Structure formats: structure tokens, C-alpha cells
Image (cartoon, rainbow, N blue to C red; front, side, top):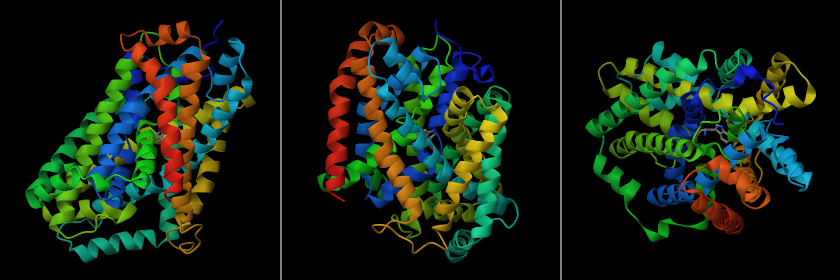
Length: 450
Ligand code: TRP
């Protein structure tokens, strides 16, 4: 007999509630903040091309695999694979993949909270000082001041972590479902508005060339390795987080359809973010390779130029915060659920344990922008190291594990019955052959190219 999830409070009330939550998990800082800056670092279109390729070819089959493993096992992400493996007379060592995923979630949550803290800081700035009428140097200065101050960063990081723990304590259904219904559409509206503003005051043409012109020399193994990690990061796959949401999913959720919705909505947000940012980069001669600061420098430049800019800014950072929040919940919930299930902790204790651990780890990332700026390993600060290892190495390896498990370990009738769709044969073929080969190829040559 399948047992129901241990924490009933985290069951989705309906099919659409599940799709909404999974989309909320996928759409976040990865699409709005990380995607444009990585594209800038890697010179534009080549990154976009590889990102979309890996997302469709490797990410979507793995997302399908995770959701079906979750719904079949109906248990926490640590035990799901080993329980299914035992049920089908296979090795329980598949657990290693799950443990690796848990490590990735903790690492990602730790720096995610730091960056989300920046959004809160900017929301506060928009409401207090404002951006209206500020010149480029003032905007630079706002960023520099924030990033140079461990105290401020710590406050905003802590506030965000408390927000995350708060929702986890309440359980997923209360509040979150209802709020997501309003905030997600609002995010699309404001991003579209920002694109129009960027087109109006910026230079659309060079931005379009930068984003969409195909240059072969733009496609390198180094870019591929980073695009692979980014594809998995935005889809929230490779760490058992979507598996956990799948474990809460009602039976009538059509997995391939949900996967499609999640992917399309995520890609739209990423493209809108790119179109809102790059016209400004070209107009104001900002550096596309600015790294993590890119969004925090370019968008305020737009806010400074338009009437009502402070209001638009406040609204944008509020919605960004919300998008980050629904993602951080997805990062934390699998760990909390696993602790509740395995260690028999109460939801309250488990939420605090996970929150405090990620918070403490996050301090390393936060200090790497100031006091520990010069503490580098192989030329990477702690923040970069944390983000790169978790995203570009652990997520792909985890994704490989889920694909192999769903493609080769679970019997065909089991996966077929979960996927229940005309795309099933195609999914099975890609998951068994293309995904493993693709991931191993990019990981191997990506490492060599560093
Ligand atoms: N997808 C989210 C974003 O793009 C981040 C995220 C949420 C995530 N849950 C995850 C990344 C699980 C990896 C694994 O912002």
C-alpha cells in the first residue's frame, strides 16, 4: 500500500493548485536575475541557444522523471528512490542521488536567500529614498553601498529566511496558493511593462542582435556547462525538489502537460527579463558582463528615467521578492519534509533546523562580497563556488540519477501509467539514451574547458 504524505498540510488542493505551485517554484531569481547576467557573461545569443536546447532536451524529461518518481513513491525525497528500488528488487544505493540532491538544496537555498535579500533591500530603497532622477553614478553607489555592508546584507538575508520559514510553518496550502494566483499574473504584467519602458528609453535593435543572432563561435563548452546548470536551476530539477511537489500531487495531474506549462511560463519570464535589461545596457553603456549586479544596476537606471519610477520600482521588487519566495519554499520544503518523516521532528522544529542551517551557510556567501572578497579558491569567491558547484555540477549529476532511475530501473508499466500520454514513448527514449549521454558529455568537456 502507498502511504499518503506525512504532512497533510502540504497537499495541493487541486490539479491547478499543483501546477501553480510548481510554476512558482520554477519561476524565480533564476529567470529574472541569473539568466540575464549569465547571458551577459557568456556574450549573449550562444548562451540563450544552449539554455533553450538543454532545457527542452534534457531538463523537461528529467522534470517528468522527478514528478513521476515522487507521485509513485508518495514519500519524502530522501527515501523515494530507495523505497521504489526495493519495491522493484533493485539496489537501495540509489539513495546516494537523493542525498546529493539534499546537499544541493541546502547550498542553493543559502545563497538564494542572500540574493533575495537584495530584492528586499531594493524594495526598501524604492519606498524610502527612491530611484527617480538618479544618475548612473548614484545607482552604482546604491549597489556598492549595499554590497559592501555585511550588516545590511545580514539583515535582509535574515528577513528573507524568516519569510521562508514562516510559510513553511504555515504549511503550503494556507495563503501561498491564494497569493500565488494574484502575484504570478502580476509579475508577467510588470515585466511586460518593463520591456516597453526599456524599448522606449533604450536601444532595442542591438539588444535583439545580442540576444538572438546566431554566431557559432559563441558556442563553447564553457558556455554549455553553465547553460546546462542554468536550465536545471530554472526548472528546479536535479535535487528532488520537484519530486517532493510530485509526491503531494493529486492523481489527476497530467504530468507532461504540467511540465509544458512550467517550461513555457519560465522561458517567457526569462526572455522578458532579457528584453527589459539589454536595451538599457546598450543605451547607457553599461557592462553586460557586470555579473550578479547586472539587474540591480540596469533596471534602476530605467526607474530613474520614467515618471512614477519609484512606484514601478517598488512594485517590481515586491513581485521579484514574491517570485523568489515561492522558489525558496520549494528549496526548503523537501528538506523539512524529509526531516519530519525520517527524524520524527515536528514541522516547527524541522523548519527552524533547515532555515538556520541555510542561513548560517549563507553568511559565507554574503561575506564573499565584502570582508572575504579576497578569499578565493581557483579564482572563485565563496559565493561563486557555492553557486557553481551546486548548480553546474550537483544538479546535472542529480538529474542524471533521476533520469537513469526512471528510464532504466522503474518498470515500463509503472512509468507509463504515471505519464499516461501520447508522448510517453518519446519521453522514455530520450530519458534512457539522450539525457545520460548529453549530461555526461557536457559535464566532461565542460570541466576540461575550465
Ligand atoms: N527555479 C528557481 C529559480 O529559477 C530556483 C529553484 C527553486 C531551484 N527550487 C529549486 C533550483 C530546486 C534547484 C532546485 O529561481
